[in-house]
Length: 310
Image (cartoon, rainbow, N blue to C red; front, side, top):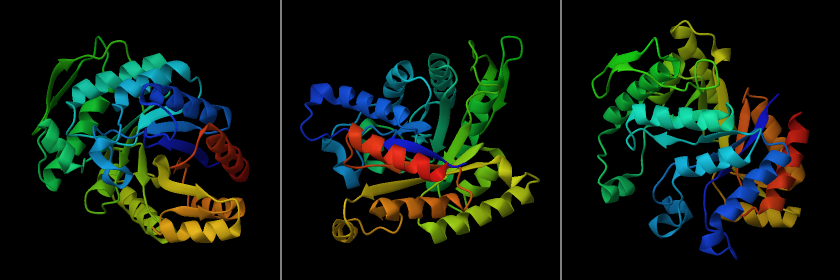
């Protein structure tokens, strides 16, 4: 069965004072949990991304926020979609995620990506290397985090890579999940991201319309077979922006504003059909970004989609 996730991508809420931002985020997460979503995700950025207003809009730090959400939720899986590997040393990141896994009772997913937002790197004094180096660092980060997740007090982890090194490192207390939180790699690159998913990741995340998803999934299947891996062992997820309209006329108008092919816009029937088409491709979880939704809107979409995909 295909599950439904909620991404909370922004913290600009009309009518909500800035000192009440977390209260609204809490309400969104709890509404998601109560209406059938299987996961809740936040972005890992220090600046809001340009399509949502850029650096002058509010942005909460992902892992502090996930700690709060881990403490107030009880069943949804939690994660960053996705963490840029340039932002934190991978051993520190592994420790953070393990701690969150302990707090949440084993509900964390470690989402990783190669990073792309050059402006925030420059503003915060964080190195922004070439694309090739960022993917090399991503490869090492997956290995370092996996090694620490699997380490014990009596079986420490060591790693000697080009960019990172561990020497008899332990991670105590361990994750409640056997082998540690699953590792998701986000990215559509057939040259860089997909081969890495095939070699090392438990999960992947793609963005795109149905033809794009179909092509990426077929490519991933081939890459898995090339390295001797059963393609079914990789959980595939799809992040999509979802705009729900009350009428056909409203849907037609909204489609003119939200014209990107990966965005789902329509009435309830349109949205259900679009989501079911993606699920039929073998997508294990459809993660929805609902730009203007309040807690009631989140609950409406959750109830609609979980019923349609059950």
